[in-house]
Length: 324
Image 1 (cartoon, helix red, strand yellow):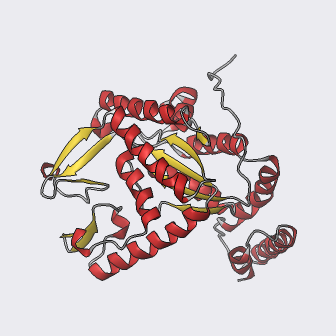
Image 2 (cartoon, one colour):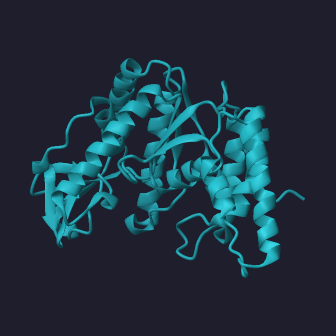
């Protein structure tokens, strides 16, 4: 019997390989993909502005990396003993205004140089809903737990999202002409918006993304949303909050991503690296035992062998870890 609907996923052409540089920007689901690739030694820069959900602010973030301008101190806002940026996730918030500015400038400059040389940009949009801070009449990337009454909430129109993406693509084409872009839609349900509203929001994102993917070369779509919603299609693949895909669902999506987006040589290398990643994450019950010492020595030898076999990858951290 067949218990899942099949999904047709077109293989990436050209596929991603280990020598490529990948920037990943967008919603919290981006963290799963980027974290997995980084752990398996791909050259990754992940969310330089922190997690972003809404397409207009996400696209503006990319333009900010291109322009690499100093962030004006006047754009920061102070609340609850912290300085915040409306254009960044709360991971940048800090009691020191200078520290916030320093972190923003450092990551923006790093993103500027990385994006200039990147081979791939993976963009994950999470929601069509935007929030405008009424006091300053400006769109925000994060509300930083300010009262809801301080914002105007609006579901973006498809045309607005297409315009934001088009503007970003125009700037990217001149900044890095060889860049290739993969769009995805986050399968995380924004249940607080309401289930009907969440589905409308996702539908607008999907329509906008497909509009630009069909219009330009070097743009691709990976169906992370459809894999979870239509192939897995069961609450047992969600976390206890019933909105975030759980470990099993995330791994299933990652397996599909790797098999359809990576070249064969990179898949083979990833399979060689996987045991090292699992070993490094292993939590021993008895770290001083001879058995664990032998475990470390075995993995240390494997790391050194892989470093010699794959000199274009860096196993310094793993060698240091297993040498303890």
